[in-house]
Image 1 (tube, rainbow over the protein chains, first blue to last red):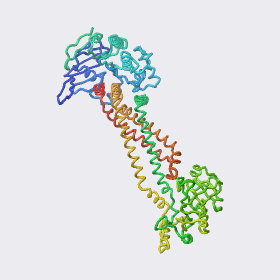
Image 2 (tube, rainbow over the protein chains, first blue to last red):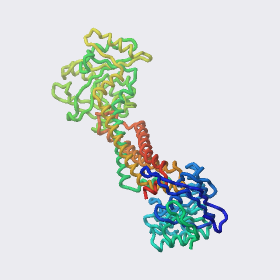
Image 3 (tube, rainbow over the protein chains, first blue to last red):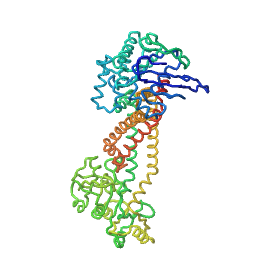
Image 4 (cartoon, helix red, strand yellow):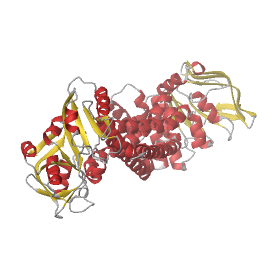
Amino acid sequence: MSSTTATRTVVDLKDVTRAYSRGGERLVVLDALDFNIDEGERVAIMGPSGSGKTTLLNLIGGLDKPESGSVRVAGEELMDLTPPELARWRAGNVGIVFQGFNLIPVLSAQENVELPLLLAPLSRSERRAHAAHALELVGLADRASHRPGQLSGGQEQRVAIARAIVSDPTLILADEPTGDLDRASADSVMALLARLNEELGKTVIIVTHDPLAAASAQRSVHLDKGRWKSDGEGA
Amino acid sequence: MPIRLIFRNLVRHKLRTALTVGSLAIAVFLLCVLRALVVSLDAGVRNSTSDRLIVQSAVSLFVNLPASYVGKLKAVEGVDSVARLQWFGGYYQDPSSFFGQFGVDPEKFLGMYPEFKIVEGSRERFLTERTACIIGRQTADRYGFKVGDTVPIIGTIFQRLDGSPWEFQVAGIYELESIVWDETTIFFPFEYLEESLKGGAASGPPGSGVIYIHLAEGVNPVNIAAEVDGLFENGPQRVQTTTEAEFNAQFVSMVGNIPFFVTTIGGGVLAAILLAVINTMLLAGREQRHDMGVLKALGFSDWAVFGVMLGQGVLLCVVGGGLGIGLAQLSSPEIAKLLGTMFPGFEMTSEILTNACTLSLGIGLLSGALPAAATRKLLAVDAFRRGA
């Protein structure tokens, strides 16, 4: 796991193990894993179902904690943070895009995008301006007042991406961002993530099953049963 | 935005929210009315003063006291004034048109009851005219009686021998400053009744039902009551002297366990609505589990999502409770009219309404706290895993 072009390491996982208890049995999902990602990289994590991809992404995003090992992300050792500190850290450093979009159905696209900004010291008008800008970036300025139920899957995912980038995070984590989309929408979402990486310099980590999606990354890595299978440059 | 999120989540299922709000409104309305009923039963006791004593027969309230007792009572040291009071027990037009009528010594009675305010007509006329009467505001409004009208009352205990009704001229309409009596009763001069009986124009028991005593300032009512009871220890009619509060409490106890019964119903209503609202909020909590996970993943703290869930419970109950309270307040004059003489002191007091507000808020906090506590502990990854 080595960086190729960037100079600063954003993600630094050392000897990370995560296991669950299922029916009295210990199930190891990540097994003494090391992983580094440098600033500005666009990395695809691939692997079969149950290989530990999402668990790895959750650890990087501070949504979960490992059993042992060190998780250092954006200069912070996440193992040392309390849950409230972790929530604050997440709000300032990570934007997450989920497979199921995970938009709040009772809020409009604009309001969904504004949500992360509620945690920042911004006025209402500033929040609205930032959210409008993020929606413009993903090409949905004209859908700001629509609720998720009134948008297509591709549009919902683009709103989710706008929500992920609106607070200008260091890292964008995308968990199967094209999983529920048709090919055209999937290509559009991957192109958008690539643009965010190339034009805005965001570090993007994508968990995916889709080889075409992985092909758009600069580097792809493969997990199998909680261990690395290979690590190479993406197409 | 969190406020908006709380509101939007509440109206996510409009029908369910409307039904819950409606149930709450009805329950709070009922609780207010039931509480007002209990309070009204007790109003006479609460507003009683310690400077008024009531002398009644030790045998029964329905046994009259001899006329000679009045003079003896006046002579007791510490007694300021004495007024006779006789339950008349007649009816107006129809036996179902019931309101109380009492023969009293007008000047003495009004003198010891400054709470009675003659708001229309003439106090002087009541004090001086033999067949004059004063009528409570509620009865005057109910039957449209005005000053100067003649009110025919058909006697049951006291009947005119020529078979005609008793006729009283309305000298005034009274209202009460505090609920020491009710605003449904007619008071007329006791002398009119007494003279009719003595003159052979009417039949009925002689004497007076009870005698009211007004005490001089600074006199201990317990000592006077004991002295009065001792005065008539050897007859001809033994008496029981009580304070006004004790006397009124007898009437409350006469209606048996109504306060307990009504309070129990209220408790049942409260428990039922609490469980219904908790159920609604638990359903809402389950439905929003995924959304709360999203908020946590975005960086909202455990307490922030706790607040979003709790806020929904509170808002739901404040709206429902507020509607119920508003309904109770707006409808209380009509309810008081409907209840009429059964609950003459019926009033939606500010204390009842404040308690209803507190109760609504309490139900909201309790019903919101259960799903909120579960949401607070929820991990975002678990929310996505189970709720996806």
